Image 1: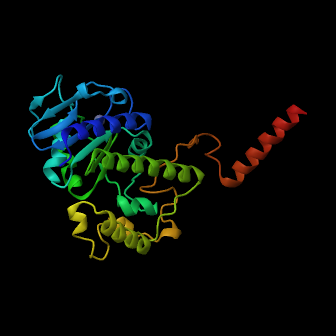
Image 2 (image 1 turned 90 degrees about the horizontal axis):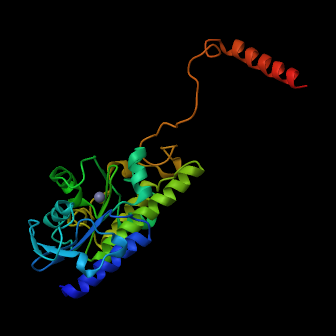
Length: 286
Ligand SMILES: [Zn+2]
């Protein structure tokens, strides 16, 4: 086990990095790491960009404060759920990465196989249904996802990333947000081509063997589609079955008149009316 002093230094460094990389702002987010006698976590109401050793608190596995001044993060229940569900996890980083959160608000899933590097290291990123921050409901809602994933998105809220060290969890968070940015750019350009399923499966099996992953995912490494969701397994890649991008089709918010005197006309009448109106305006301009 890493000595507490080194763990504290790493947690502080990663906390600062989260702010510098725009993965959280102001008093957002919280970080924790496992100690032999409890959980080291950031205190409630501290700015993660300027965290010092005094902002770190030790709680027991039920959330009761053991050492430090101030109160533990209000989202400690979520961190405790991570350690309870995943004995292999040694650190948890929760942040509010803006582009990833925008995906949840837009109703666009990130549980798709798009970038090879992400399939290798994270698999897919699921989105947990909305629940109020800091509640037992939210902690309980993410439990099933914690068992199977190292990076999770919470609807309209943020990300939870799990790792064997604070830096490992941070890397997963950074990868998630970078993926969201690249996917957003591709969507802005017109479409997102997902990886063909056979390539996604090959990459995922390779990644699990090389980098490891949640124990439940490692158990599936020899199975046909590894731990990839059904949506990835039926994807034909280049055929791009989701023309608007990954995930469910999103209605484009375009200004469009659906009723009015012009819409009441037939196609031919409408064409005549539009041409007549254009000629009228041109005539007036000349
Ligand atoms: Zn939060």
